[in-house]
Image 1 (cartoon, rainbow over the protein chains, first blue to last red):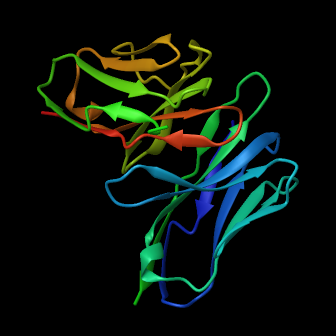
Image 2: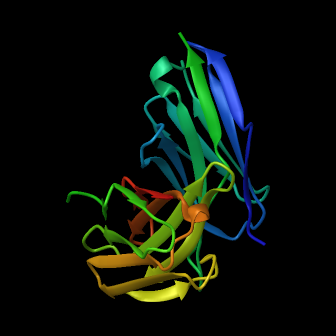
Length: 113
Length: 111
């Protein structure tokens, strides 16, 4: 069964800290992996997309890495700010005949000023 | 492009009534996904389409749920009859073969 898990479920850090969010997936035959941000009561905003052939992607203070062989991805946030507070979700896209997009359980991040 | 557009944004209905949720995907995208989000279960994939054809509906919880995509620019998710446990936020997303984009969701409350 294709499952995606995120650890930790919740995280609280003081402003300015660097932090890492983790995403694990059981089936390594992925097509790509996408990180999203969701603010309370809002939709999902795409942050970064990593293709299966790539090892990492960067956008501003965000860096996402991908290790297919171990079934893991990490989202690194540098110099966290209160505005980064949100739920972060990873989603795995499987290719081939299915092309499903399966979501992890999410990490609720609170950055304290 | 205006992005993925869902309507209505909020829906309150009485148990037993029919509910129809609507989605307009981004032009040119050939995949469309319907998700349900609850606190208990997170984001669940209900059904997805490729080129207007349903590919996998294994996530549809019951026969009360049905989805259609009559053309490349429109999809509906229908619940008939609705029940209180259907209360959730329903998201639609579209993509080409790479990045997926989400609508703002429809918050459904069944009383």
